[in-house]
Image 1 (cartoon, rainbow, N blue to C red):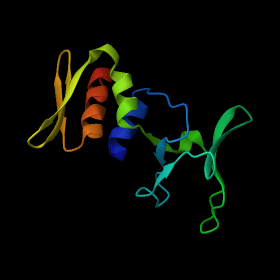
Image 2: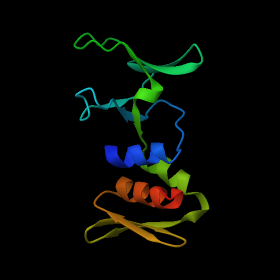
Image 3: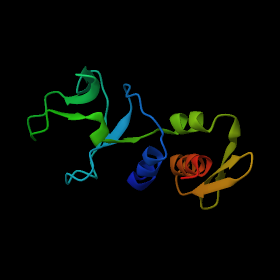
Amino acid sequence: MITIEQAGRLRKAGVLWAPAAGDRFVVPDREMDDDVFVVSDMTVEVHDYQGSKVIGFNGTTEWALDSIEQREVVWLPREEQLRALLGEHFRKLEAVPDGYAVELTDSMHRADDAEQAYAAAVIHLLGA
């Protein structure tokens, strides 16, 4: 999984998120940074409310968060979503002794985790 710092850099660089089932996100700065949520058709749903996206939490009786605006959460894209952002710049992903490396047409990006290597490559492409 990518780090919250990487996700923040992707967001700041302008990567847009259209929430869909299976997408992961965190709610930062509310003492829940370590809690990863997943958009689901049953428990975490996305609704349009007065022109903006609202993420609703269904059946959450243990804490008082019924819904939150999309702009208040940080998306944690999955490997295939990050690879799609690389487009034609992507050459290959390979296992290396210290983790994984993503090769682009003009650079190589290494990390302990494949998704983190992909995120580093996207951040590089966006100049962020």
